[in-house]
Length: 479
Image 1 (cartoon, rainbow, N blue to C red):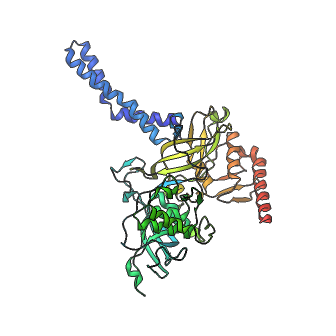
Image 2: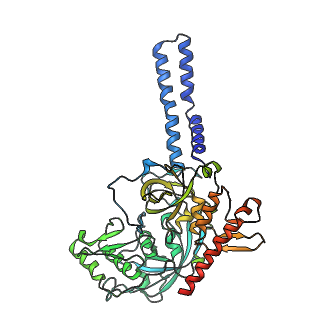
Image 3: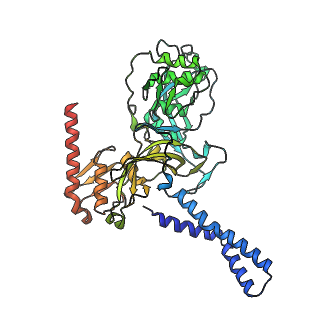
């Protein structure tokens, strides 16, 4: 993994190349002063050179901070700032394009997703779209085969009962906002269907996907409702109730979110009453994290982003007591800046230090790879490299993506037997920590215990895998 010092040196050299006129003017001013030139000319040349030269370290520091995901004390959230619960996750995604007027949203299941193309402007550099949070260039084009459901009445069919749509399938290409890729993987979308769908046998034509609302149906974005009596109800992945809530919000022009909670006490009485009526509906079990057939929708191998791996280990960092720690994303908000492999987001992280001290929140702007965003519905965990003194943390995307299941991991035993690890294996985290403690780098997702440098940890690795298999078997017997 790159080091901060290496990135900073590279940015300094680039800034020096771009602003070389500053040092040149300083040298010319000095030579002119030695030759007895007029003081006004010398002061002008030296002043211009000093200003341009001062830009070099400032621009290098800013560029290194933007390009390198390093979290320091300056990024800690201020005391008294809004707090999020342990399971909260808020995503501020761009608004969807307007669809057919006068129709309520309906549910669509993603039966199949195929990557078509992704052609962003630029390469690894940052691209900023002034005032445009949702440019088309940074959205991968995906072909979706959808099964669109008719109206699903909730609590007697009060919401949207006047718009009946028969179930049908449709295939179309769509541009998916990076922040909303997990809704495709989860397989649940909120869509608008044109009025033509009402006519029996008519071609429904393309549907309009409501991406931010699809994050709610997918369960990526958590949702709670605080009633008029002050009690808060968890409705994440209660799909039928959420769809009814989406229709209420759609009919009144949108309801603002306060964190991840809709507080009915802040709404107008009529809207609050409609929301309250939904609470009297039938009990509903949570929908699955992902709908059946996820393998036909999983695009992580084709989306840009770093592949998952057990990661590199700096020997000096390891010897001095550097550790891996886990953090969790609490919120993500889009900006107008993007890189080729992902959007540059304002994020809030809850970090749990390795020494057992209380967790704290950090607020930072970093680039999040798209292949990780496609799995946000089932994980918000992130792996950090903690400095030995605990003063700085670096987001480790290769290890994060391996832990998230972007890349499948495996082990080759000393006798050549291959042991695959499930994408969400509980053994991955202790294995990463074991390798870091021993100062062993593994650039890939497979631990080949036949290699000489891995032989000394082969017994410990196999013991961790056996312990996980035993735990999994015990859990299966209990269930």
